[in-house]
Every structure is written in structure tokens, then in C-alpha cells.
Length: 131
Image (tube, rainbow, N blue to C red; front, side):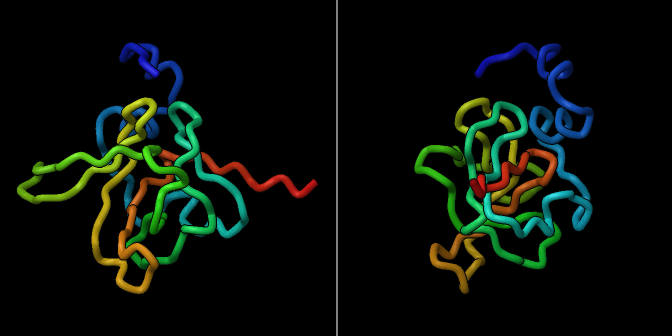
């Protein structure tokens, strides 16, 4: 999904634009989806691509929604990030390139050992259809 900067600004809220397009980070413990416990799918707030399922969400204590795996292989692209004097791995939506957060290898109690530390504002939650 390719949009111009102006189109992204028109499509997204100010906070979403700041995170998804300018790689900002929301303050810890402030995101609407941090405590989301229902079954469903977390999708990209920019393009709607399915990124994470509720079944892989866990409480990491970091202040951001955390997942130990992606919904489907290839849904999230990983990029080396050497900004701010650190070496990290950035997670971006593979469909629209929106910045989601970072991935860390510190979830030792989770099946993959990975912690996808994701900004709430970069996601939307689609509850599982109970019908």
C-alpha cells in the first residue's frame, strides 16, 4: 500500500501518523490495547493487514502490547535499527511499511522467545466473531 505523505496524514490520526509514519513511540502504559484480553485479531491501523492474534499476546510488563509471534509469516518485516545509539530490530507492517515497534529476544517464558513490543496506536483490534 503506497500513499503520499499527505494521504497518510489525511487517513491517520495525529498519534497514528507520528508512530506509523515517523517512527515515534507512544508513552508506556498509555495505549488502549495494552490490557485487551478478548479473542481476536490485531491489524495494522494504517492498512488493515492482519498482524497478530490475541492467542500470542502476553503481559510483558513493558508498558506496550507484547506478542510472541506474528499472525502469518511475512506479515511483519524486521529491519536492523541502529538509531539512538542502540542496536535493535524494528518491526514494520510488511504491507504498508508502517512502524509498529521493536522485537526483542527476551521473552524466555514464551514459545518463540521473542517479544514483539508494539505501539497500541499502530494497531486496531478486531474481536473474534462469536456467531
